[in-house]
Amino acid sequence: MLNWLKLNLLPPVGAALVRLLGKSLTIRTEGAEPMLALYAQGQRCIFAFWHSRQLMMPLAYRGAQIYILISRHRDGELIRRIVSRFGFRAVRGSTTRGGAAALRELVQLGRSGADLAITPDGPKGPRQVAQMGVIHLAKATGLPIVPVTFSCSKKKLFSSWDRFLVPYPFGRGLFRMGEPMWVTPQASAEEMEAKRRELESVLNRLTAEADEAVMRRL
Image (cartoon, rainbow, N blue to C red; front, top):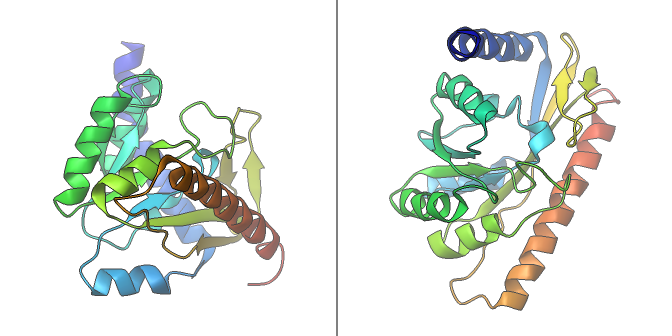
């Protein structure tokens, strides 16, 4: 009974809170121009963001159809139901459970014209260390990876493994996107590892820059 209540009552409340937080914040988006240029050419993307910064990400999406990788953990179903209220669809799996099948499904979806989203340090970390799955996905689909982060001036950082960020109302918020990253179909294992390190570095830099920027007047 408690699980039923959790899965049926919390998703509409959670989605409403995200929307209310978004309306209460003064939010700016920086670095979106390359991604919008790709959209203008009919290109689709893989959006990569750290697990701790995912709460407000539905408000950053500008496309028409997106699938997000969500773990098969019991809390994953709650997340799926919340993001579905923003039009996001889910593929269930992670590096620990169902990862290979989920990757195959994401590849098919990416090749068919959908955007994809993934937290490259999820579902259990290490925190802000990119795993290889997103690089394999970019290689197999031919889609560029768009690094994106979020920060805000008034926030709660939880003591969870990822230091999950929740904004307080009425502060300043910032979405910051990096340049699209491509992985060629012919990329070697060494080249893919270099791309993994590059993505990790870029996401950490963008996150640090966003954290610093929101403490100044945008």
